[in-house]
Amino acid sequence: MSDRHSLRLEANQQKQGKVSWLSPSNLAIVKYWGKHGRQLPRNASISFTLDKAHSKTSIAYQIKSDSTDSDIKVKFRFHKEENEAFANRIKKFFASIKDLFPFIDQLEFTIDSENTFPHSSGIASSASGMSVLALGLCDIEQQLFGTLSDDSDFYTKASHVARLGSGSACRSVYPYMASWGVHPDITDSSDEHATVFQEELHDVFKSFHDDILIVSASEKSVSSTAGHALMEGNPYAAARYQQAQDRMHDLIIALKEGDLQSFGKIAEDEALTLHALMMCSDPSYMLVEPNTIAIINELRAYRHETNHPVYFSLDAGPNIHLLYPDHIKDEVVKFRDERLMPLTTGVCIEDQVGTGPKKLS
Ligand code: DP6
Image 1 (tube, helix red, strand yellow):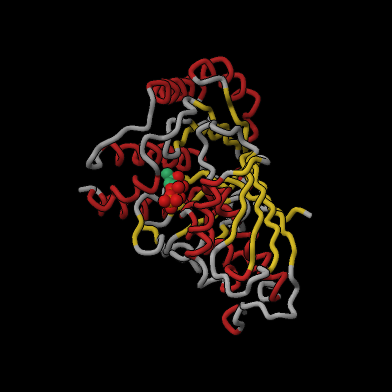
Image 2 (cartoon, protein in one colour):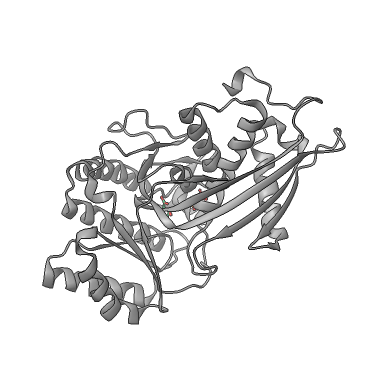
């Protein structure tokens, strides 16, 4: 285990190497909204791990020639173009996790990253982007010190590190579904890292669809980090955190039983609660657009007409996540293309629940 090891390089150690990983984004059904301390959540949350929306990142490293140089050295290319703003963000992140990877200032890094979802589609990239970096760093630790050969240790540390980069990213390192935050119904749940929710998950959810309908691709006016901070002064905060814990309890039952109606009700209530919390923050703000609401109304009308179990969720933005089981795919795609797509920018990412990160050779 890492804690019996100094995780500092010695003169005769391997001097260079490269790791490459793919890691997906995720969609929370019960949302994380409000945090404290060192990126600790105010309530438990649970998400679908996505498939198509992912980041691929390779990290090449070599030992610094000057062993007295303690600066963090990172070069970062996004889609092959050097990006200094991202490089600076990563340097700050790396400096903040030196306690977990003491060798970080002995190396210099060249990072190449790309996202498969369209750039500027309005899809948050922090979950895939931060989880892929965390996986890469754990892989480097394993290459250099052999301290993470146990899979459970590897993914627990990757999740912990990803959380420090962006809270929701900690859930992306596991297949199908992952929860984060202490909850009495989840064995070994923790505020420090996510826990996989796979064995008890009903099969219907393992092939669930999540079509991301892009209503607006513009940058958010208020970041998630600022949104979390506003929860500290929100008069409804305490009630909200209790509600999330209660909804986790109900959702876990629905996920085990394959109860689509209860699942859908909680997913939609959570999405609307998240945006309601933004509207009653001080200062108040809105991230939904008129067409977000038009799509929700159209979707609810369709459900009323057909009784099909198709539901929506929202992230911290105006785009709709259309959630439905695989067995009604053909009908839903027809409805989506005829009645929902005209209310979007014309972009839809046809995603679904995925099997988690992958090491690339
Ligand atoms: C609405 O994880 O992006 O997507 O921890 O500040 O990086 P930071 O915030 P972030 O917040 C995501 C909030 C959410 C809900 C969720 O994913 O649980």
